[in-house]
Image (cartoon, rainbow, N blue to C red):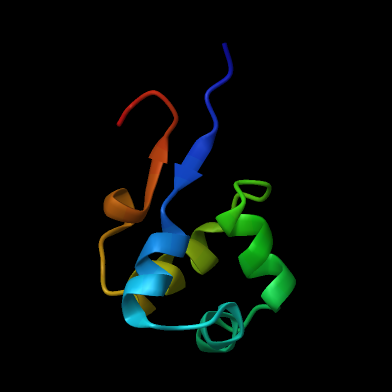
Length: 70
């Protein structure tokens, strides 16, 4: 069974009170990229993942995990 990377980006974004546009601007990607990440349709590059954890003020392992590990 293939295990994909899962995330809780949407939950952390909402906790900050940010729109998808605001998050996209903060990590320098498009809103469509944020949508795809939140819907588990796209696994971001390590650079984007690090930017996400930085602006959302959480660790990478809080934000991302391998399906079945959490």
